[in-house]
Structure formats: structure tokens, C-alpha cells
Image (spheres, rainbow, N blue to C red):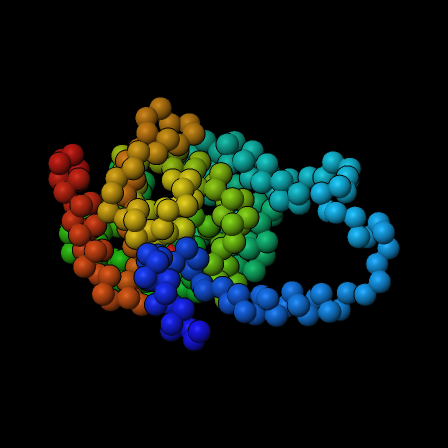
Length: 269
Ligand code: URA
């Protein structure tokens, strides 16, 4: 079956949503595992042939991420102001991304505005300037929000991950998990009245769900943030970088921006 026929079959089965950002080439994965199997010695000892489930091993050593993650949590919780949080994050050496990035990209805009927008991770321009959403997708986002009368004096904008992943790759799950305590503390210190989650990665990580952004977008969710008494309404939207690549999705994005505008109007914000 050729690639196109396989894709059409998936559509007929109702698989209308990509779960991963990039396709997984399972033919390559199979070829790699066959190559590994061929490279294995043919004769094995009885112990090597024992079923894997029967193997007992000492309790696993803590995963290498646990220590930095606990430290991130501790450092984040110790910050009592945005200035302290920014300084603590800039000094944090537990995330490998900090070593390859030029600088920390903290947040930009107005922390008193009541609206917090959360993107994914800095790109090249953000890394150079030290502010979120100042590259091509940031400029597009500025225009989208300006169309409903919002500029950076009316929101605070930040990212799930505050350091640029090398080559603009997506942050890994463990990088996101490591940085999440910083973002949650950032939210707790800002105490926004509402949050916008830009793109699938921000939405899934903050809401703690696996649902794709095409299903999540445009609907308000109440989220509990550690350190805050009240849950906060959060609106997932399509990421501006995705909209630049898929102009057909701009219609949905426009609906979501209007949903945000209506919410702000109804709250007198
Ligand atoms: N720039 C950012 O700061 N965040 C994104 O998610 C994309 C571009």
C-alpha cells in the first residue's frame, strides 16, 4: 500500500487528528530494530534467554531528571515576587536548554492586566532579544490580538519553556516537566483573571490532558493553580506559528479571538 492509500485508509477509519507534531516513520523504526536484532550474537546463554518479566533488579536509582525537577520546584516556590522568580530562573543550572540558549526569556507585557498568554518556547529572535513572541509568529500574534483591540499593555505574555530549544526543535516532555514549576509559580505570582494557552503543547501541559488542540481550542477550561485560591478560566487557541503554516485555520483562530474579546467585554475587562 502506498503512503497516500495508507493515509486515506486512516481517514476512512476516522483518524482525523495527528497526535504527534511530526509523523513517525514506522518502516524506518522496523528496519532499525531488524538491524539491531541482526547485530545481536546468535548464541545466547540461558540467563540471557530468560523472560524479561522474571528479571529482578535492585530498586531503580532516581531518574536523572528527578533532582533538577525537585530543585526547580523548590527554587520556584521560594520566589515571592516576579523579580525574584526571574532572578532564580536566570541562575538555575538544572535545565540543559539554559546552556545552549543565549538568555532566559521570561515574560513581556503588563502583569497587572488580568490576562496572561502562554506560548510554547522561545525561537531564534526571542532568544536574541530576551522577550517572548517577538519573531515572525509573535508579530502575527500581535496583529491578531490588535484586531480585537489588545496590545501588550493589556496582557502579559510568556512561554511554557523559558529557554530556546536548539535549532527551534520542540521542547521534550522532560524539558516541559522540568520547567512547569517555574510557569506555575509565574502564574501564581501574576494571579491573572484569565489565561490563553497558545498551541497544543501549552494547552496539554497546563491543562494536564492529551487531547489535541483542534478539539481543545475555543473552549474555556477552569484550571487550578497551586498557590491560588480560585480556579482560573483558560482558553486554548491555535498557535500563531501553525496559523502561518496553515492559513485555512485562520477562520477558527478568528473565532477564538472573538471568544476572548467577548469574555473580556462581559467581565468589563
Ligand atoms: N515565540 C515564542 O516566544 N513562543 C512561541 O511559542 C513561539 C514563538
